[in-house]
Length: 395
Ligand code: ACO
Ligand code: ZN
Image 1: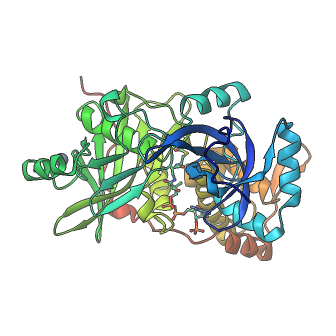
Image 2 (image 1 turned 30 degrees about the horizontal axis):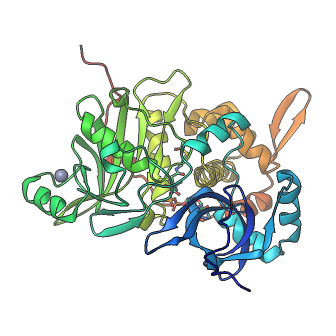
């Protein structure tokens, strides 16, 4: 197959074609953007979206990765996606389920298109943070003076970011922080949680939003960080407290949100920290005597983590509980909002509707099966180590 021809007209944005991915197999992509190759301006490279995968896997590819025989001209999008999914083997499907779970269903088509147009190409490709170099997932609206570079260097303690390594090194000699600003409200072994008030630490709040947006697709950036508290999870050693992840929370939420954004930094993912942060957010709600729910829309990974958490917490109670229990009682015990409980139990087919009422049907064998499928429990929150009082506006 001739692919390297530089006198061939470049592919148009919007073209659908097959592209060789990191698994060495060909997958359908849509061309999102193109640019000239720096070392050879006669040739183009293409920014592609793999239509089977989440947008975090969008990337620049060289022409030779594309199977030009598969270029499609005008295709009805819906029909094409259907054909693709029919063509996939079961093994492919399972693999894809791990990287791609619907996370868009709560945005309408017009806002989704607008969002995707504005954020179509990742600007910052990698960041350095503490001892990790991390590949980013999505576009983040850093101030214009940072948009001409593809790598940023973060101070892991104050989260200030810089364009050059030497600037970071100079900063590290001057920056005396060894942990996030704010109050340490939890410590258990090497794990600590800090509460940072966005009003008292505005720059920190803004920095963490810029950083988080690199890994969160459908979140607007709140510049008004005054209205939020940030809960930073750290692994501590003799060099300091190193950020692992965080969640933000509105000081006052009309919609009973107890969490706005949640992030585990990629090098720490799939180790149970996400479920720890979720559990922590519900422990804070219990202390406030409120029920809570995460802000919508949830991302694909957010939904998976929440579903896992809700399933485990609710089924653990149902397993131990003798006799009937209502959704209201479950909600009082867990601080999980009744709608989320109902939806979780419904999706597990544990709810029947009898005489105008929802009744929970909990066969122990079925519970065990679901619990097994819900994955690991994550790191536990030891509530006795939480020293915290709910936020009160200081007059
Ligand atoms: N593939 C498949 N399943 C996954 C994956 C993955 N890559 N990542 C997490 N999960 C599922 C699994 O069921 C996992 O449990 P298991 O490991 O026992 O099977 C469960 O989610 C949670 O695992 P944790 O290790 O507790 O969570 P983690 O520390 O990885 O953090 C989080 C989860 C915070 C969602 C992380 O993936 C992340 O930061 N993603 C990017 C930002 C994001 O999408 N945040 C949520 C947005 S919604 C909102 O903010 C309200
Ligand atoms: Zn610093």
